[in-house]
Structures are given as C-alpha cells and as structure tokens.
Image 1 (tube, rainbow, N blue to C red):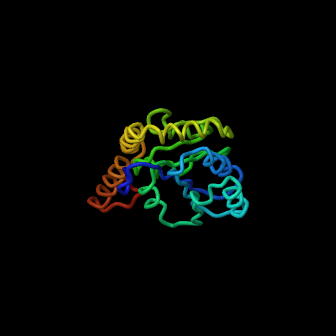
Image 2 (image 1 turned 90 degrees about the vertical axis):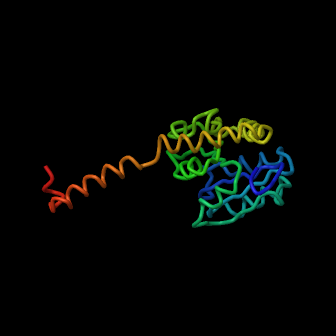
Length: 191
C-alpha cells in the first residue's frame, strides 16, 4: 500500500473542471464510498464553486480536496491508488498515459479512445459514460480488492512499456542522425 496506509484509497481526477469531465458523478458517488476513500481534484475551471458546494451537500467535503492547477501531475499520480476519468468527452487524454507509466490503474468511461488506452479488467475498469452507479461499482471494486489494484498496477507498467514508450523510435531516429553526422551530410541529402 502507498505511503504506509493499510486501508483506504486515494483517488485522483485530473482535468479542467468542466461538465464533460464527470466530476459531479465522482463527487456524488463519494457519498456511497467508505470514509477512508479520498478524492483529489486537480484542475481549474468554471465549476470549482459548484463542485465544492456539491461536496458539502453530499457531506463528503472533508474527503474531497480541490488542489487547483498542478505542474507536477506525475508526483500526484505516484501517490494515488486510482485515477478516475468519468468523462463524457475526451479522445485520448494524456493523463491516462501518465497514469499507466506510473502503474496507476484507471477507472474511465468506455468512450472514444479510452478503450484503446485502458484495457478493461487488465489496467483498469471501463464504465458506461454518465452512469453514476456503474462508476460507483467500479471504484468500490477497486477499493474492495487491493490485490486486483496491485495486479492492474503491474499490468499498467508493462502495457506502457510495451505499447507506448518511444524508445525504439528514438533509437531509430538517433541512428539516422548518427549516420548523417558520420558522413557530414545535411538531412535532405540522405538517400
């Protein structure tokens, strides 16, 4: 468990505080999650005040932290147990790749490019967009099954290394430039 915690779960949401990102669904679902589940909301936007009010109304304000913008999302992801992305519109958010690279399982809407990034049952759980109960069920499963989270965490790292690293293309590009410099040619001259 992260940071020496034996129970509980740290969830993070990263993204602009806009209706399409699904913050309301997650904050509402927090009311039906155990008291040792915490949510960090990273991002700024027009919904900040109404989301904070929703957290108060649902009596979860003490477990939902609004952190605003962060330039260091990687460190935040490293400390979390789960990334939640209940978005209604997002093609392939970069934060999912960041989560996978840090071994952070993802619960996300199964829309647009997300099923290509998050392998349902392997690196996370895909949910029906806009479905609070489906979101709650997925997050609750992650809470109830820390062993599942750990297996998914390892799968996230493996998948990221196998599918998304640019190491091979970087090496190929370096080889081209190495050849150019060794033969003192301009890039346009390579034949």
